Length: 313
Image (cartoon, rainbow, N blue to C red):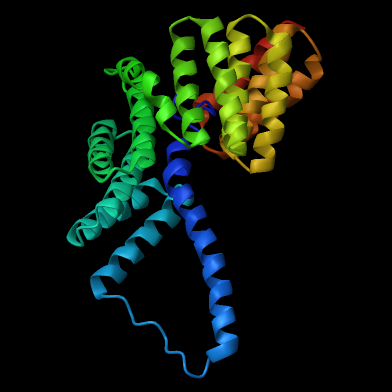
């Protein structure tokens, strides 16, 4: 369930790069709108419309806007194609920042398509450009994506990169980037069986996300902590953590994460042997939602839990 769980794979790289740029654009647009309104009142008769951008610039802006929209729609094949165009358009304009952004988001789309080798290559290219331009925060976002890609590939491990980056993470001034890093490190420690260490690191990740007002990040870490409680044999703590994550994912409108939280809460209640009728209801909802999402392996997992639940009654 690596690339579909609400762990860190909850479309975090898209939100770190595409959505951060969109939030910046919205902020600029609001300020710009007020500025235009003020000017319009005092001198609308004499003001001239801004000149049209050069054709190549307009083409690059159009490719980027279309690619962003396709990524938001999670239309990954079309998004990858459009981000590839955006890379070329930015390169033709010698726009290093734009090219690095497009490469990062192309890598993220390729991750969703499980084209991991190409995704790693493009993320590394983005990091190289950002490092050369001194764009430190964007470089860190590239590193987070590379960690996630290395986690997904069977022939790679994020361990070496995590070890290199851990002493430097304080360089990042963005708490959400730091939260993403600690989240990745916590998941890695859990996979290594270092559960107590993982618990401490995930708590740190949640604190970073909370300080950055990243609701999706907080919800994601709570879900990861719920799964860790299960691994520690503490379903009594896992069930309320999954319930908390579920409420947060509902508020965010994240269908895949909602389905996983329903499954997790039902699983934890069964393990704790508490409120089994509620567990039954949660698992039925999870199975139905997974089918709606065409996540049939996860639906089968929920069905199997239901079968075992009723076999034991």
